[in-house]
Length: 391
Length: 242
Image 1 (tube, rainbow over the protein chains, first blue to last red):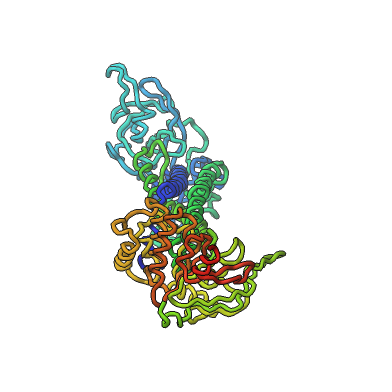
Image 2 (spheres, each protein chain N blue to C red):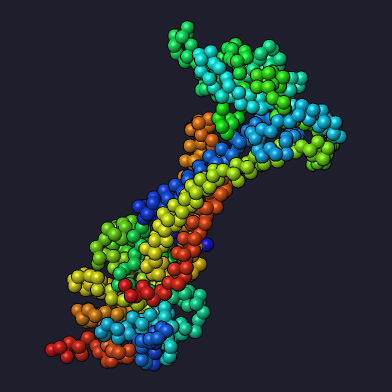
């Protein structure tokens, strides 16, 4: 640490050069904003790819066709798959799941492609995570469907002339047509938005298979729960050996899905480019400005060195200045990102700030400030105090 | 000067040599400079550009290493110390007044003046209190909280002098202290240096081309080509011009 009051002088030198101080502050804040906001949107988008997995906590294992690459890459299974899985030791229960895209006809004549999820008729396992109106048990009523609340306000908003022409959201009691078959809304739920942003409709498995065009294989996947004490890896291996199907734990299935999108699409490159750009904005603006700040103050550091300031004192001053601007710039940037996440509606923009993101942004800011401070310190260390006599 | 003050030697340089060498060239800055400065004395170091004045005071102040010769400043050889010891010695022993003042514009003149005391470990309040007293002595009482950029060149150099003297150094080294000032202001600044510098146990070495201030010195040491060419007194200089 520099001599006791020198930190105050170091900070006065930093804050006193207000144009440069605000330039560095905004440069670092903008860099932090770009890095953290783009990373949060990327994580949000990637989370949507496996939203259904996080919305469905009951199964221990997700059993799918070995060729299925990600959650929505449906490769339907034989109907007998469910019984075959149930026969495996360690499996306490196994239920079929239907998941597919079907056309919905609204009362006002609009047609909308929607994600229909058919859950086990008996247990209703894999139902929506939150019910806003009605109850999950209402799915047992005739032609019952539960609709995601977001869709009721957006894609399923209807223009019904008898009510004065004002568009209104879909409500409990309204009837729709799924693939030309009657469906009645018995509940409104809240589900995680899907990557493709289609409306989500829950119904029973048997009803979903009636709505869907008839195919030889209708089971999209099998969901299974483990017996108490059973080892998930052992059971998954046994399922693969005896049925030829792939079995994944929830986290593993989510990772497989994200892995697909990361590998097979340009999304990571696009977001990665923005994040790298944010880093270089920080280097180019804030790092460069801080280095120039040290260069401009070199004559004062030189004078202090001549007067008897130790290297430790001078380096401590530079480190304190760099650390202060790093903390303030990072704080402002992450604050703006958080406000952005708080005020921009999540359904429009995928935004998910995990604890890793501020850490990554802080790491980038630390690298920018450390590099520019190290360069500045190198100049201060190499400073010949006799130079101060050369004007 | 009292006889007692004169007997104390502040600086004794014998045969000091300095060569600046790079890969393919070398420049001889000092070719055996000899000088003795007594305590209580004010010495003007004069000579053409490139004659070695700045190198000589840099060596005396412990900022630059000599290549040959012997040097004692207040009884010690700065070059015999480690870098850290020399830095601490400089802090205790040498006060600097620079040509370009080198006042930090974002600190008040009180804080600028207090820097040497703070570097010595004094707390900020006491250091600023001591700095204020000295600022009153140099005629800047009441302006302690001003920024240096609000002061004239002469006032800034007064602050620089206050900063150089605040920790009561034994040697005051001034590099062209009047070159950035007009004639009248320069003279007033040098009168101040002479007044505060001519104190028991202290010696002042001033590098200057400004002949108008030579009368304030005890001796004027002329350098040429890296050597002490001749030493005059203000009286002998006046006689020579008469």
